[in-house]
Length: 282
Image 1 (spheres, rainbow, N blue to C red):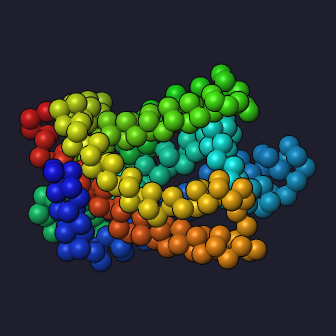
Image 2 (image 1 turned 180 degrees about the horizontal axis):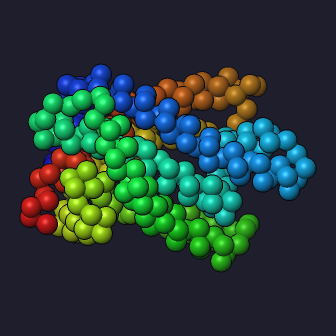
């Protein structure tokens, strides 16, 4: 099974370069946090002026926009406000974390990986990565955001389930279509060329791409699935009063660590290797 083989090879490549990935991921995460804070502060200031409130409180509220999920309110992900906040997060995330693909490219092409390489590449290609993040944000969230604006909120049953399932399928397919977009940019392709190349690779290898993506989705489901599942079944999520909820929250916190330092680099490695193998034939 080719997707399983891709994941195995990605894991082996990660284990051989584990310190380079951990140190680089820490540095990139710090940059991401600083940039998100700088982006959030003007928004919090505007909201504070409009509501005659406190800037810090508005900033904390922005950082906690996903908290309703902890209380079983899964439908919050269908709201326009949630998607409006999610869009710049995706853009900034791609902008900053796209640099990890530079490290992956060195590993996959058997070059000597350097910790400073991704940061230098990010600095010299900041505009390209930002535009790439903008494109990915619009492609992934744009149609769902537009649909949520047209439909309005609250979305009644069973339309809410249909909308949620359709949005999830859309995200899944778009991630597959654009899976080798950033590796193409790292390889020196222009934005439009890289997007076309990623589309062609997906069309000719869609079973392999979606298979790898599905395996990583299973991993994420194991790490984070218990949290929303327990919230829905229990009707609430109060870690301070419920020992089971506290345990699940602790495991989810550990899951964030595993996702950031293991699963994401493995996915980037798998997609970079796929790009390198298929770029000539596509």
